[in-house]
Image 1 (spheres, rainbow, N blue to C red):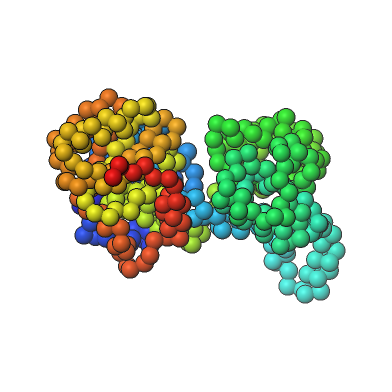
Image 2 (image 1 turned 90 degrees about the horizontal axis):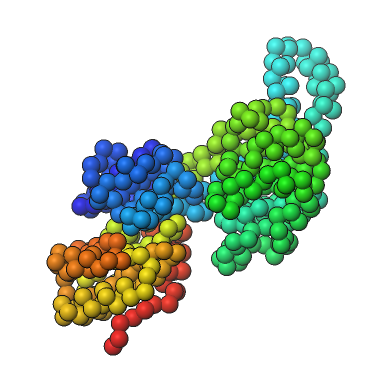
Length: 425
């Protein structure tokens, strides 16, 4: 029986994925094997000795101590793309709010609710509507910073609205490049994008290279009178610099999903209360994807969509399986193979991949691994941990008879395509 402790309210459709006969899931679960959460700020002290995985039902993992997890050999999962459509739609709404003073118009009409004379109402509406005059998005240029799952969808939608779209993403993956419409003009640097854009929308995670990327220097390169949208992460912008750019008129308006005491509120600052993924569909998609990834890892050792370990998927043909996590130093795999050889255990299949300072190995062997064998492997200086699997039923459907989420299935196929290291015949 696997134990999964939950934090926050996880969508019921995600929790229903866990078969009750194999998984104990809930907020009160003690000594968990894994943690499933949304926005709960996870502390290192909450990572019990048995925890092998943390799944964040969302894209960002800034509320998870990833470095601590990596050191301890704990795999951290996220759910990239599961809430992409939800954030895309909110971004489009913000674009329209920025172009047309819809919010001001709504507020004005709200002040007329006391009127009972239809003629007087029409007179006031027609007389005041010029105050809320806006401009069309058609023909304007949108700069998209970050061209991943969300950014590429925003770019496509903007093209459908008749906008010109330029994009910048220094870490654009091959998969993301394939998703990107050909009509998006790629910029070589951020300054070039800012200089060409009437509207700029941010869709990058909060990483060392992106925190504070929209600072005074970046805003100095901005086309005067442009509008900035931030529905990614608050830390990406320097709010004091935003305030200065608004005061000088270089920045026409700032719309974000992160209310701020520094910026306050006003006609040129609009903020929503972190609604990017707050749709029923997004919450369900994230929960389902996180649950599927946790189940695949706990039952079979496969890793799809981890932020600190490589994606590894190995079809189990026969035998027994061992997963080994080690520091990425030369000679470790050879020592593991020596332990297996000394125990006269044949390797049927294996996959070894590394990411930064850690490596992950899935090894299918002909004999059942004993506690003594795992102890010998863990005694190797560079090995962080080793785990055996009682049974890996990769063909079993999640509870309810549904298939794996599309993103997990796609991740599996991508991992399958990677080069494998196989044992000698």
